Amino acid sequence: MTEQVRVDWQDRLCTITLHRPEKANSLTEDMLRALVGAVETASSRANVMILTGAGKVFSAGADLDAARAGLTKSGLWEDLSGAIAAAPCLTIAALNGTVAGGAFGMVLACDLRVSVEEASFFYPVMKLGFLPQVSDPVRLAELVGPARAKMILIAGRKVAAREAQRWGLVDCVVEADRLLQTAAELAQDAIAAEPGHVKAIKTMFDPTHGESP
Image 1 (tube, rainbow, N blue to C red):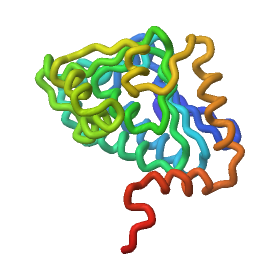
Image 2: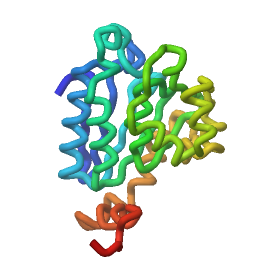
Image 3: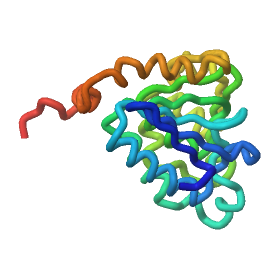
Image 4: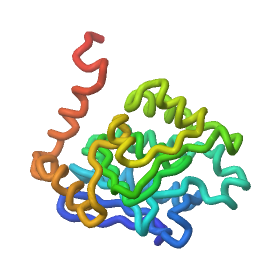
C-alpha cells in the first residue's frame, strides 16, 4: 500500500484517505492500484467504507505528468469506480474539498456524499479534450438528471457545494470540522448491523431484484 493512500480500521468501519495534499491529491497509477486494493479489502471485511482526502482538496483528478503519459486512458479508473459500486458495504464519500476530473468516478460510485462548504465540482473533459470514464455520465445523470450532467461534462459548468446539494450531486453540506463526524453519524446503524445485512438492503435497490430468472 502506498503512503499516498492510507487505510484506517475501527471495528467494521474502514476509512480510506487520499494522502497527497501537496499535489491536491492528484492521482497516479500507483494510487489508483492502491485504491482498488483498499476497496476490495474493505468490501470483504467492512460494514461501512468512508472515502476522504487530506488537506483542502479531495482530488484534482489525474496527476498531470501521469495524464500526459496516458493515465487518462487506463482501465484502472473503471476498476476503481466499479469496485466501489459493487461493494456490499455502505460507501460514503466525505469530500474535504474540490472534486475534479477523474476523481468524480469514485465519488459518483459511492452510496452517499457529504461535502464541506468550500468544495466545488467540475469535470473539464471538454476543455482538455479527454473522454470521461465510461460509467461516469450514466451515474452523474442518475443523480442530477441528463441536462445538468451535460452542463458539467459538455458545457464545463463548475458547481459549488450548495448548488451541488440542490442538484442532488451531494447529500449533505457541512462545516469542515464536522465532515468526518457527519460521515460517522451516517455510518452508525450500518456499523452496528449484523454482517451481510447492509448487503441485503443494498441488493434491494438493484432494479432486477425480485425478478424471476
